[in-house]
Length: 87
Image (cartoon, rainbow, N blue to C red; front, side, top):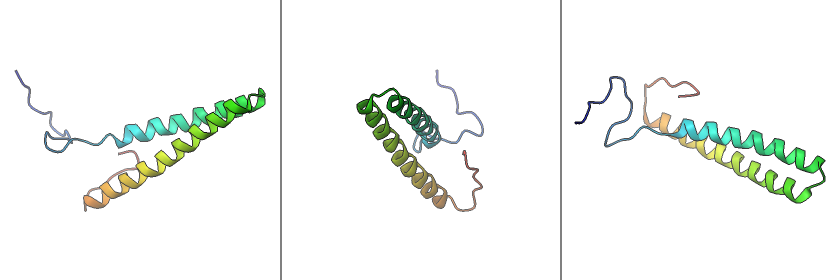
């Protein structure tokens, strides 16, 4: 038995709701944790581990930029719609 889609649901079968907000949160979490781990690794004298963590932090920054660009493009596609920063 299939249930109908709840009211106010944003996604449809043909056009799924975007998971950009989840990606944004996960990339932000990855940036913060990798930056902290990089600092801790450098302080502990593990330069190779600090470099690896710093590289992952850079990847998280690039991912954040890509996500924000996609979110901005999505907002441009929906004229007249009011979106908050975390929507």
